[in-house]
Image (cartoon, rainbow, N blue to C red; front, side):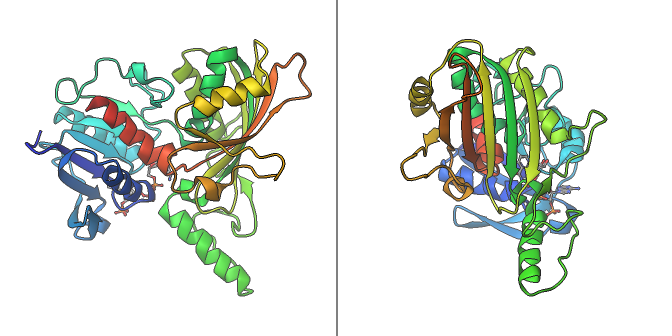
Length: 341
Ligand SMILES: NC(=O)c1ccc[n+]([C@@H]2O[C@H](COP(=O)([O-])OP(=O)(O)OC[C@H]3O[C@@H](n4cnc5c(N)ncnc54)[C@H](OP(=O)(O)O)[C@@H]3O)[C@@H](O)[C@H]2O)c1
């Protein structure tokens, strides 16, 4: 460890999540002594600013992790698969944003508001290892749903997502912007990242389709919930959709509980829940929007109402919005790192 703080590497520093890492680390005054910014050969030599200082971006190589205490990975699954073990071997603690290790036995999958205890005995400097950051839609769902689960035990969840362009990275954001200009100018929309026109449209999530008819994003919400809650009894079904929003995902969540839970009790629980803010103003029809959640740490919750199709106050509906680059990725990873410092 550098005498004035930790030696931290950001892998994928030029990406949507990587750039957010720099903002979050600065805003939270993370104790950084030395900062190393890594990306592909394409970006080597470019610069980025952190706390008013200019840093040169280096190409990620097998020797990048000498002397690094903490490596924050957001460069895609194949990069994590190859380089995260190399970083651990060099003595670094890795917090990984990709899906590479999320379902690997023995690798903790952590949301600090949900299961911080699962970090176990991993410790900076003493026992390095890999900690996985869950999928962004799963994080945004579980931050408000877990305290309700603790109170009344969720039996079943039905989720519909409305996911932003930024969830697919910096190039997808640029594509949405370009297509919007093109369509407004009466031109054909250029489709490079997504197969279909994104501006003024929406479509089923672009992740791989499985033989069971679910896409991988939907399956992650099921599998990751089971892993983090340490139980496979809860039933989860999701429909994930990309909407032409630049930043912050929204989700409609329908819950079935084992025990009754009134909407008033749910509201009280959510008012006190860490990482949750309420926007639930029925009289003004004012509920969370992606713009409310953009650039914010909390997951915003509204439309809290008893599901009238379920008997005995055992059903509840919620509408939530969360910034998936921030709480769904960079912030959650930095919060994990803070648990280790
Ligand atoms: N966006 C989100 O909301 C979100 C949320 C949760 C998790 N994630 C995960 O975070 C990861 C990054 O996502 P993103 O949205 O930030 O993507 P992005 O904007 O496309 O950024 C990708 C980053 O990876 C780097 N990279 C690509 N190939 C590389 C290589 N061969 N060697 C080293 N670096 C390489 C890129 O560097 P160059 O600029 O040099 O190409 C860039 O810094 C993905 O695994 C994604 O699933 C994203």
